[in-house]
Image (cartoon, rainbow, N blue to C red; front, side, top):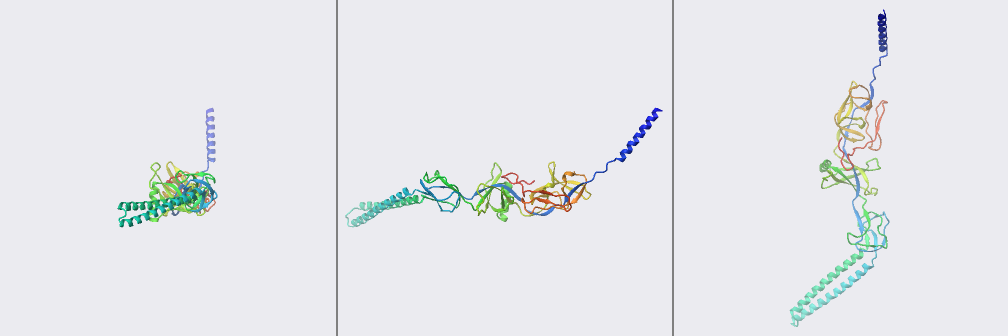
Length: 410
């Protein structure tokens, strides 16, 4: 009897638990909301980005061509000077004395030349009368030639003395911005050799060079491009500027590739009429890498990583999510170029990636992909038509792999 009652109680409890479990069954999970959009199709131009430094077209150390005492300085530190403008004056009195001495020596040589000419003429007349020998006539002719040589030497010495007097006025050898004076008036300076004292320096200001380094592959590309379209245009910005609003042209590539780094030195010439750009400044440059081509673009935030692959999440018509491997290109107008892996009809997830996984189903809401109006100036916004949120970010047009090397395609 006790066994029967125990069995009945157990059956009743099992039924009650079964009823409770059926009544409290959890509802099916809802599909995650995401924003999708078709890739933006447009023509783009790849741009290679580099970091480099500005260099002056001309840099001159100003030295005196003769030694002497500095008498006066004729410029203010930092002035813009023209070629031939007077910068320093050395004490001219020693040079003036040398010029007077050279002139006296020239007068003496000219007097000896006149005497030699008279002696030769007299001896030739006496030779006709057989009053002198031929040897004496030849000696007088030789003395005349020697006197002429002495006059030429005296003239050269006078020109040298006059040049030394002229060199006591130190003028600007080139136009540009002058540095501060290194020697004040009253100091004795050495001149006339490579070891002479540097009085100041001058750097030209307009135009100015922008020098950077690129890979061998980029060198080959630019050389082939130059054969068909001429010098490549270059856009430059300074480290505190957002936009690449300074323009130049690529005008020089070095004659050899550095064997240790595998890079080659390139140079662009940049106008600098206002003199704002200074040698030694750093900057970033973009060089147009190729002609325009058709490309598909998506937000950089829509690209994920799957092991060694870069992928985007694509939503099918039934709401299922599929990861597609893609090959990436550079950033253009804040969007990433997709070289291969998707089509213009694919619906790419641009918002809500953190809530989905491949294979699951989602609730897709349509959005749009909008490029930046101006790179590096305003945030790029991907705004769907419905109230589904936005994605913003500020990016550069082509990320550099290293400061002095070309960016590698991702």
